[in-house]
Length: 295
Figure 1 (tube, helix red, strand yellow):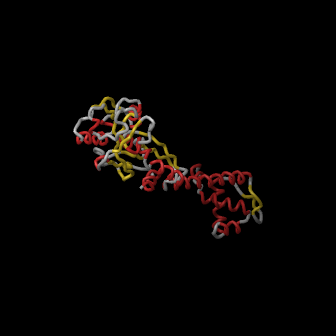
Figure 2 (cartoon, rainbow, N blue to C red):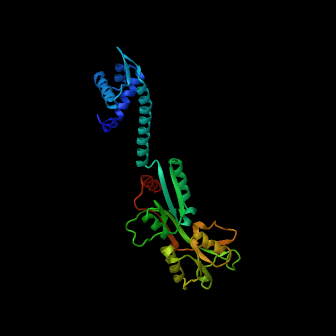
Figure 3 (cartoon, rainbow, N blue to C red):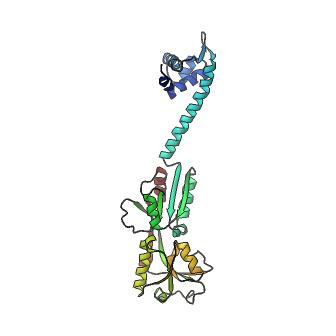
């Protein structure tokens, strides 16, 4: 028998040997294994032939284990335990009960339902690790495509994104953000009233649809916004508003951010509303479960 043949010992053979070693009686071991005794006796003989060493001390009955048998018993138990762990781990991964989800999100999503969804998912699936990454819509689309993100909470519409799966996630609307000391901060101004003000916006390529929505609202109000400065991310935009650099149009869900330094005024009308989508490309089982439960 070759060394390769010896290495091909099945888990079933190990299970049979463990039963005989623990019972020290072939009939009881066979009953425990729900099989008849002759095949069990043959299986143990075959196992000893494969190993090239006797495992049992025999007389008229099984007297005990040889030194090789005692070593093999310990290793067989460890092997079966590891096989059980491997089976459980694979099933848990396939069912989405374990794994890693790299979740991207636009900044405003943290002020909507995303925190509650995350909290509920973590409570139900504590073995799944969630890695959160704030990013613009454009950066999240790139992350889904280069597989550095599993899921993305972003703002549509998306250009050339037929490869992405999208499901509704949240609703928001736009509002005006003015520095607290601005003359119109407490008056509830219209967007048209800010026509001459310096605006803080974000680069068009980082949030194309959101940027265009603001530009359209300004156009409908009769002006083109004078962009005094661009900032990467909504928190950066609002931080600049807070120090008086200019005014902005931001998600209403963020109205609690730096409320001591900023006054927020919701914009009326359906055109000021927008949606957030949960997007994926080739989600892992855990990510697919997140999408299912977030719906």
